[in-house]
Length: 510
Image 1 (cartoon, rainbow, N blue to C red):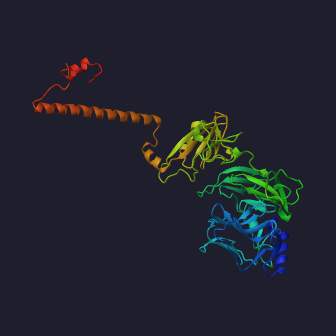
Image 2 (cartoon, one colour):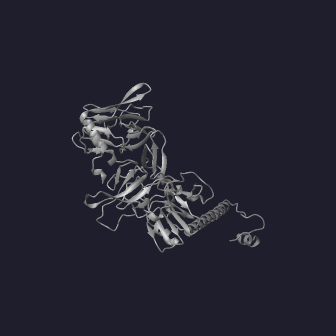
Image 3 (cartoon, rainbow, N blue to C red):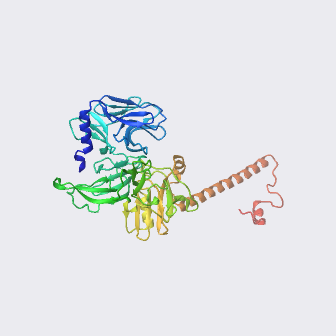
């Protein structure tokens, strides 16, 4: 693998640094004359973010090509991160992505003293290069940020080993590398031993994240237990290659290629990147040296309805015109996401029962990535529903009446896909709010028949109580008048007693 060899660009930086004893600067012609740009940081460097700056990016360190810069980046409306940005397009190609972002409205400091450290206004460490002892920091023209020792050719630390959401040309991506995480932290790209896969990420601490796209290397040998795992690398010719490190130090063996639209075309002065975007799709882009916009020439998932969250939680994506409905709309209306709030976790409680949930049933529904879901075979629609209904970690199930396959959704329900087949049946759980669940707790577990019988019995009891109260009142009134010597007929007209009243008036029954 190439990650163990010295990059010629890094070697050139080492030679330069041995000849330069102070921070290097790059002369750049500008409208106001010649401007000097910092191209290296030495021990003792400190820079402070201007709190509340109107700029969205504050560059601190430049590549010698002036195409990239390291600096403070505003993320969203008010957060702060450290990033390497492609200056012509203002697109970040690497971010530090600490667990807790800084506050753009407050000062933050980047310092270098054998390691890079980003601290918040209160001195709390947001991010740092771990286990690093370097003499200088440089940003290579490849966009690789390196912490270097004067006396060693290999970097003590490099951003290529710690990708965020983007890979660039000649950056190795291995099974041991941190996964590519989308900027919204909803999706991840990971490598297995013989495949690459896209996963959904949920903020609930689950270790097994659901997979929604998988590509297996064509020439990999999964049955060979001694074979090394694959690794990937973006190539400047316009493809993403999957490789095996050959045994005996004979170099790498390419076992598969994901070719782009511009594969093998001669595009001079092009910079390429592959990014996991916020919609969950993995795309490749290229940008010419004189352009500010990126052109996409590859996407892993071709159709929008095949993306896991294209219509939001409990959404239904209709292919063709990519129309979004809600699963509980029964096709009577369209809607824009969200249909329901995004969920995390499961429906398990501390007791023997599941947490309260409503049920949505829908026909003509499927899952775009059902091949990656847990599967039960040779079952029925009722059996499929029961397999999920009694399982607190299951959020839904899709049954295919043609194949008799049952696909279980063991994660919060996201976008489903419309399929014009009445044999496709879906069962989905929707968590009840705390107030709704409390009011419904007494009715939990009742079938429709039991519920109806309970209602009828309640009405009968109410009627009997009312009748008893009425006749009790009449008897009390009669006794009262008798004691006062004022007894008279309670029923007016010719009726002398209740028996004659009942026989004369067919509408009155005793």
